[in-house]
Length: 382
Image (cartoon, rainbow, N blue to C red; front, side, top):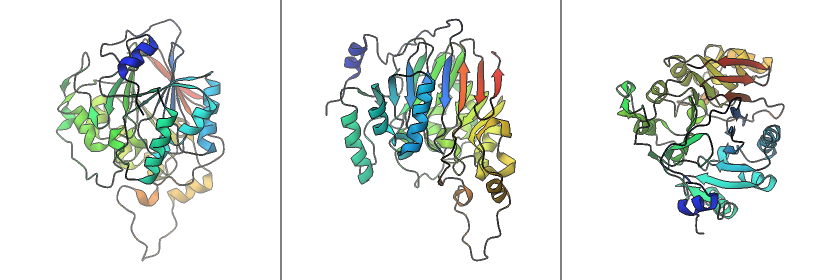
């Protein structure tokens, strides 16, 4: 299948698509950049409603009715009749599982991805890739770092894609990253190969900045951020890779210097002590918001309850905090927290799923709301 080129997409849109020069942010009074961080039970889907009225949906969660229904409910709440851009960060089922159902349910104007998966030796991936090429025919663009999604009033910059990273510093960025000195590389031989290929996006609306890196991994975080930081700082950081310990190094997080972090974890995926310690110690971090209470974190490492969108039944939490004794011959938990909730997805819950909504203003201020309890906190412009 012939893919649409960047030039032809630009002609199609009638704008300078994926231009290298910055789009002037809109500062229209009263308009906000609204972000809906949905509960995909440790998968991922986030809706960005731009002040222009355009929509960008990043990822579609896992296959099945549960995640699809949750996405459709949010699209309805946000008044989305068609999706302007569907970005698939990479080809793992907890990120692209809902693509086919979504395309059948609502029009999608443009598809963005990093190119063909490098996991084509896996039959299920090869089968999906063929289906994806059919679904995206003549509407697909493969992006590289430095490209921009051509929307109005908000700058949406590709900073990672297909294991490549942004090298040209943004205005005001490019300084030496002091957190590179303490970086220790990881053995990533067990990591699914497509994770480092994730499309990562930096959103800038006026003075507000937020980043979403998909499942970008530990070792390539160094490639992005060292020796110099090409991005600068952000106001809001979505934890890389759901908050598991395969991502989220201090070299990345501390250099980005976020004021707020949102963790798209599940009850048994993410929220591991290492990730939480990195966040808690990040310079200037004010709060952590979580989509789930994390079993791996126990009482020591979870955020206060009002910052958590989905909490578990008291009996389940008690069992996690005070697990029953294990037989003497029981095997030890695997490295990285697999034994008690570091990676495993578990069944998740199928009841009410609450989300975290963020509304950002061009002056740099933003409000975060937990829809479970309607607790909101506004972070003033700096």
